[in-house]
Image (cartoon, rainbow, N blue to C red; front, side, top):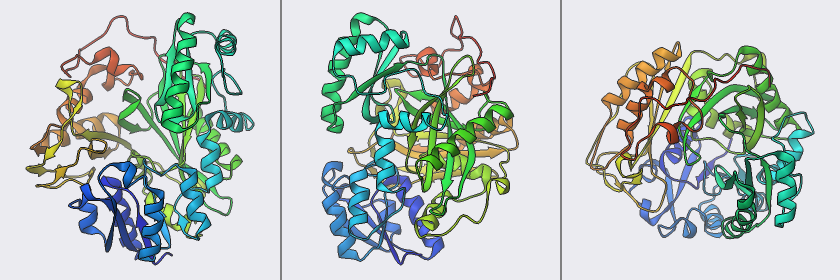
Length: 467
C-alpha cells in the first residue's frame, strides 16, 4: 500500500478519500486552492499544499502545479476524485510517466472512453446496444442531414469529447440541424479543444440507469448493481437510487452483464460506471462510461457493504479482488439526494456565503457526506454541492419515508439549500410511484421552484423488457 497519497480535489469527495486513506494507514496530502484554505479537507489532512489561486484553472486543473506538489511532498500516488482532472487522460499519462500511481484506470482507457465516437464503437463490438447514429465525426450540414435522416428525428448532436451532460444539442426540426452542428462545433472547440461532433437518435421519455463496475489489474471484474439517476436538471443529477423501478430481475441481470462485458473489453481497472438510457419500450441504449468514482457511489455502498474508495486504493496498489460476482449481495433500497447550495425559487441560482448553523440528520440507515461545518464560507468558484444525504431501508417505500424524515431534520442556516425542494420531490406522487422520467423537472417544477401535482398528458409507462 502507498505510504503517502495526494488528493487533488476538494469538497465532500476530498474528505471521503481522506477518511478511506486514514483507515488504510496511508498518509495524506491535500492539494488545495487559496479559496479552500479553511476547508474541512485541509483541516483533516496530514499535510497540505497550495496549488494556486481560487479559480480551478489555476489550481485544481493545473497539471503542472499538481505534479510539482507530488514531487515536493514525496507522495507516490494521487486520487483525482470526480470532476476536475479525474477523466483527463493527459493528467493520468503524466502521472504514469513520472512513476506516480494514478488511482483510476490506465490513461489509454480514459482516452478511449472519453472519445464518445470511439466508445460507441468499442461497446458495439461486444454486443452492447447504442442509439442509431454516425460512426464517424460529422463536419458539415450535408453529412449531418444524411445522418439524421437515417436515425429519424428527434436527434441529438454531441461533442465527441463531451460527456456528463456537457456538449450536446437536441434537434427536432431538420431546418435547425445545420446551425446546431456549427454552434456545437464552436462550443466544443472552446470547451474541449476538440470540435468533432456526431449525430445520434435522441431517446425520448427515457430513464437513466447506470451500472457500477469494479475491476482489478488481474482480469477480475464484478458489477455492484445498478443506480437509477432519472431525476435531473439540465442533465445534472439531483436524486439517485438503487435498485431501479423499471427493471425486472432478468433485464437487470442482462444490463449488468453488458456493463461487465464493456469493462472487460476495454481492459478497465478501478471503479467505473457504465451508463444507459431505458426508453418507453424497455429497450436499453449505451450512453457513456464514467472512468472515475461517481458522486452517487454511496447508494451502491449502502446496498453492497463495500467501500468503493477503499477498493480503488487497493486495486491501484496491485491487489486482487478477493471476491467474485457470486459473493456480491445487494440488500434493500438506497436513495441519495444531492443537497446543493442553490435557491430553487430563483431558478436554482447558486447561494454562496457563510454557513452559520449546520445540524445533520442521523439515526438508523442515514448517512451524510459533506465538507460543510458551522462557520464554513462557501467559495464562489466551484459547483454548489453542499452535502449528500443518503438513506437505506428494506424497501423503496420505507427508504422514501426515511429520506423525508432525514430532510426534515436537516438544518443549514446562512445560505439557501435545495433541502426543501427535495422534501417536496420525495413526496410527489409521480416520483413515489416510480413512473418519473428524465423530463420530470421540466414537466413538474414551477418557475418558483415548487412542484405541480400532475401533468397532462402523462407519458406512456415504460414496458419491462429485456435489454
